[in-house]
Length: 64
Image (cartoon, rainbow, N blue to C red; front, top):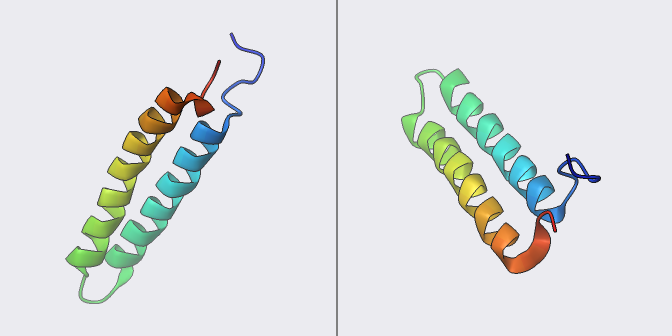
């Protein structure tokens, strides 16, 4: 196991964007009636967080 346990800029950025995705998606489900566009923006943020992690890792901001 690595010494930093995922404590890298790439990991933290992905976690923050993913958390924002869950918050936005959850907010979209709490509206009455349900706001599907807001929900899907949250889902898109989750996908973007994964892509962002991979891109930042390849740029050298991940685990070395």
